Length: 367
Image (cartoon, rainbow, N blue to C red; front, side, top):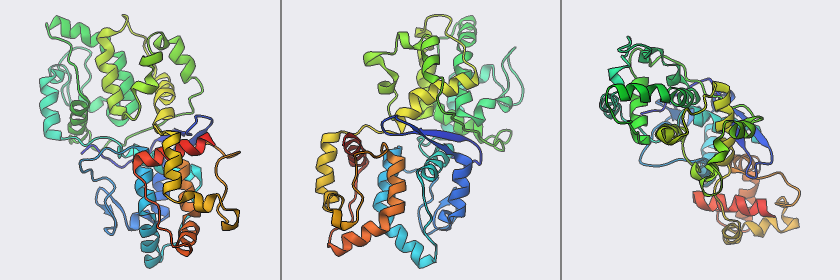
């Protein structure tokens, strides 16, 4: 299973309207997860409590930030009750803290699909990777062994190296009279699970870092990407809710169709570009404001938030942009008081699907 908890890396999570950046750091996120005693109830890969689900265990599900936000929201009253029973004080959670936690979950590959090492070993051979790349030794000139792959420790480096080495690989495939080996996201995930869990590689600490995308848009233009990816082919649309592994596969499969030679990218350039085309949209969801307005009414949100006497904050006008991250921050800061008010009014705690959460966020941002 391609889930490894790491204490390194950072992620910049963009707000729902891309109006600003909420920086998140996976290292701080892991520290927060432990310091605020989440680990007493939740475990990660078997380390921690048993009262709540192991956050590294994947059962047929696809997690996105919206799914995570809706699950945390729906489960909040039960979490607060369990914390009170265990004598755990509820922590403050700023948007920055919430972003740190999301970064931690991303660094732990929580949003990736599950993989299988046995399938990965088969795919590594079937796709002819093993013909050049040995585990500890090189089987071909210029082909580094797997044990030296920096890309196994950083998904951004994986994207950068697979992109930059595509032209060389095409040459090698041509010499061997082999067709270009297209990959599916599942195949690459399986291969990564296999390679990351080899005795020679499993001790490597993963890195995951996203800087603020100060130059991402300019690079996207200067490297020629904008020439093709506009309108219906805009990457914000094509890559919506895709995982980083899925993006790497898309870039790999796209190689033969690129104008040759494709532009080389440094690690920092790849980080900036992926931050620009991926992180910005990944954390803002795909909500619909009209649907969100209906959900806001159906879930009785307006009962308190449109009543000045309730003490609930007025939402919308003049406020910062909302996102899955800011919603979790608001839930943790104001949720207990909200639960108390709803109990007084004999209203049920609202529960949201991931889509409803995204729709409500879109509605709040439209006000």
